[in-house]
Length: 245
Length: 245
Image 1 (cartoon, helix red, strand yellow):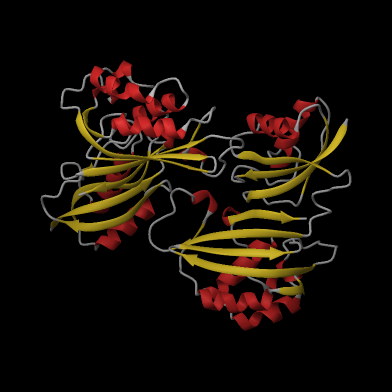
Image 2: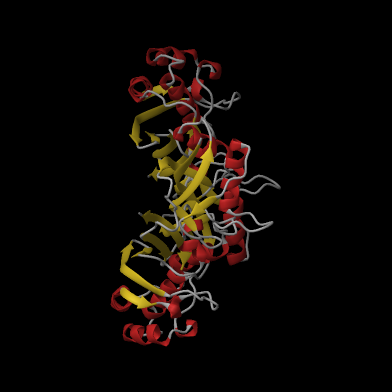
């Protein structure tokens, strides 16, 4: 009997061409579907809550999938963990209502971006951290972040120049924390455009380095042009933490 | 002017043939010496506090080295961090007394061994964790650990069958902690024989799985034969945390 399931996944994105399946490229969605198709001996479509870029990681990616199997949710989870490569894991498999869809039903997401600034090097988590050459001013970045939170048209922070749909999003919070040599940015919002978190981080770092002013943020938003914002921060520091339903 | 230095190093041992320099093999000592020789334009010998096996990691390896350089300790550290690969870092470089020698002056060491037991997989720290197929009984392992602490002849826990020198060592503590799906063993002692921590872990796990009894430990020590103890646990879970002077 066909049953809908919700999956929670973790992965290190380093060696994948992002979440979304692409022909002839190694992607996380492609890997998960391949294992489930082997398990069910039938075509399977996994819907992720969003597309993470190449090199971006996830601790709490959500996905939905309809499967025709006799296995229990725990058995499905264990089957996936046995046959998925060691950089992809399934934390949870749960039966879901027939209409549940991981992307369409998502109401919020949390992303975390991690940087390292200071002497030494992050040896053990180097794949998850972006190394900065200078130490940014956190107070300046916090002032800029205040301007960016709220409901805005984030077109200036969208990496897709041909984006046809609405670029209006609600950014609930940006928490910037410094702990030793680590600097983390935590974002919560109702949805994120292509590269949006990475462009937000790239712009905040420009402010932190003194190359932009916090007070410029409203003008950058108003311009609705990608070129008005700062650079796109590298993928390796970014991690999708949680999807809300 | 030649000055003696103490270094504190971190590395992920996964792709190295251990700490100790070996001809034609990639080792951590070999890497560090190569960078310092380039810096000083002269042969350099780095003495580590001990030899970590192939695949074993370090968060606080200590080493001593005599260098003829005009650079400050911070400049030496930064030079090393710039030219060492991203899986080796230098946390600290400090001038040391002329007679300081990282191995001969070491009076204690702390090692940590990390296992994962349970559903799911450790995606983000998988290179630093040994995955167990069963969940061991922690209380049984703690009882066995009590028998192993103290000053003993650890010949049964020595991986070198041709060991000529004394196999007497003082094991101060074995702390076994369970946190979620992680199981960690923390060892402190005045010195460790070849593979000793890994054989201790392999033996404790046998007890935890019910295949050996805690009360067998004194007899295993008394036999002074490698075959009396349990298997050698994999290198990937082991990390040298700290060296005491």
